[in-house]
Image 1 (cartoon, one colour):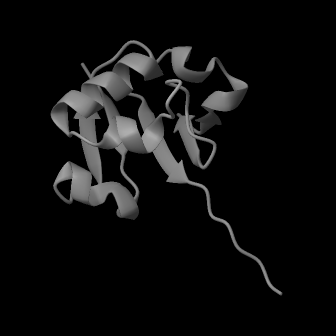
Image 2 (cartoon, helix red, strand yellow):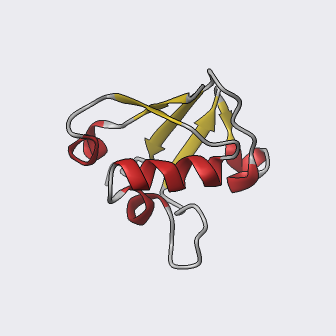
Length: 93
């Protein structure tokens, strides 16, 4: 069984417009690799040149920020939801 990945609006062109996709992977690292195989372009948007999560992308596994868990080695059990949330910058002058 797979996990549900919530795709942010800005990345939906990569998933053919889908707001969610089903992806298998025992860890977040495996899930991103399988997401990339199914929908090319995600790895480039999510991972930096060193293969780590980009600073401007937040990833949650069942509402928990993976940066406070095990990062890319965070386990992803079947049936869980993984949410990709691009960081929002801005402010007032």
